Length: 269
Image (cartoon, rainbow, N blue to C red; front, side, top):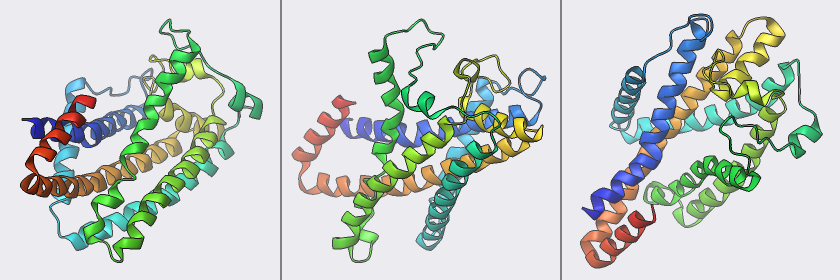
């Protein structure tokens, strides 16, 4: 039972939650492609989003059942897609936006107008840190994949350290690039706008619409983000399968240690 709870928590934290966010993003892409919320566009019901979620999970199950040579190819493609895609967005979005925030606004403005009646700056800051926790679920993938890595004694630690360093550097650049394209936070978070309150969709869509009169380019960018998320979860499942295997081996040799570890980990969640 403890093992099942552990596996459930781990899968929920990564695979299920991220795939659900991908289902929501697909719903927003469809909404914007059909004239947006205020233009009578198609707004998928919660049941449709769940259906998207189920379909994405099925696709991930199929892709991770392919031979390791295929997974290696998809892994390399995913790495290239994420590296190129992030730098394209970092440069493209603030460059084409007709209105940009000032350096002072980006680095000193602290928004407390969230429409929820919460004005405590410390509380808002702590809640804002929650979104960064996803970044803590990736760097350990290098350790899970070590038995399938060449020169593991050197490449394993290098993978973990480089992942942390690259994530910090590129992630900060991405956040800053997007932040310079935001000038109206209240409108960005309004659930009644064309984007249903999906902030990143409005940033991309408005950047292109303000420059070219059409937000089609923003929709394409959102599609690129959706593909990146799909690749991320695909690699995450590959890593998770190795992670479970390591602890199943530990269970067979040191049962009591395994159960104790599972219990403490599960209780911490």
